[in-house]
Length: 279
Length: 271
Length: 83
Image (cartoon, rainbow over all chains, first blue to last red; front, side):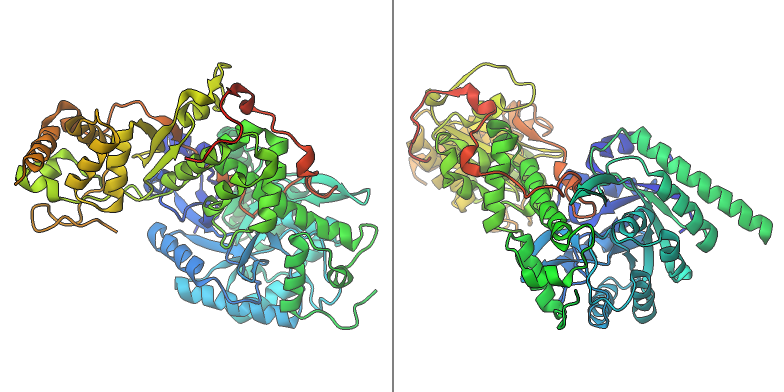
């Protein structure tokens, strides 16, 4: 897939996108919102004429020590077969334990034990789908004391052992780095750049915990300056990739999303022309 | 403050699950790095997110219940429900099947005896909306059948169909709870309602049935022949008019298209 | 064939040619309660809730009273039999 800027497709915009087909590099949907038979599913199938699709799963729980939920995996696989997306992804996190689903991207300790679990689950997922999947770095609000790897080291090792690609969310890097007192540029430099297949951009909120600012990945505003700067840095270092604007809370007018995508597109174009000049 | 024996991943996830469900776990907090933001405060962010997002999911599915009781009351009620019934899978539109029964037994809502029925209606609309829009039975499908064979047919209803009976004027309560509804009061003693919830081409909706029509549809759903459905309808509503009712239900696309050609043996229900 | 059965057969057959059933089915009857947007698609786990890090969720349920459109629903018995 070419490095273009796309937007997250959310139901408030579905009718407008279906009608006007605005220019957007690709559309990304959340798998878990489209596993039933709602009219939205039919509308998205029709959008395949105009857009490349990306399916972003949020509930496969690839970090669960429990085995993957086979029934859910089968439903996601059927959706992937039906929509034939260019990209498929989920997160480096877990959300299922003992058959109960916690609607969150819960953090993992970065240990050899957890790595083996994620490698096994990503392998099962890739086998079920018959294709490579991308794994996204989560927003973290805590770290475990017994972690033996950094998050970039964990991701690099996951890529090496499972053959998965990476979905690099730059806002999540900003959020995690702030909350865990890390340097975002250092964080970035530890990644296997060639495995990065997609970028995510979103806004975050600032809240307080114990009277100190903590960043919350709420996807409820425009992309922040720090995430834009880090995106520029990532594109310079690793190259342009398909880039998504995500917005899930207080969803704005479609035009605002498209403006943000146009901004990302400029960064991509700039990098592409630089690369062409260098070649 | 390093934990001497780190929790193995299954134990850590069990402890985290218990924490998210509301239990404080010292072993979990000990495994988390705290600094000027304590381990406990960091852990609480996840607990709050799970509770809040599931409450929001229930508020979206049970929008009419939410409008009736308001945000604060709904959040409290949802919290109790979430505390006893977490989702078992990640599709949030499929979470909340047990909420109407929970509402029925929720003591603080006892002054709103119709609330359970409203919750059942919200749930049925949600299920209908997320059901596949398979082809529907048309008058043309039946046109080739000899009239004397029609009474012995049994026909199916599409996925997502639900019949909701209430002692209360549920359709009026529903209408009064919509955004922009008039301030006009609804009299609870205005009588019972039978509502048929349907998945339509681009949405889900419900219609009001009279007692005879409701008995007819209930019988069809049960899988009886049209003849038995008609007999039950006539005893439930003496003014039941089979031709009008059947024509109305066909026009509403309330029945599923047959999976085999009609007229070849007994008509089978799809699915 | 009994007399009732014949009546049922002809009533059903008549329904098939009534204008209301014969019209192209995108029916014209006014329906209540149309459910359109999947509002739930914003609650998926990919983002976190702002404003929830400060205090433990939700006060005491027993202190809260319903305050909404229910104020418009009047009359009837307070504890009625379920339908």
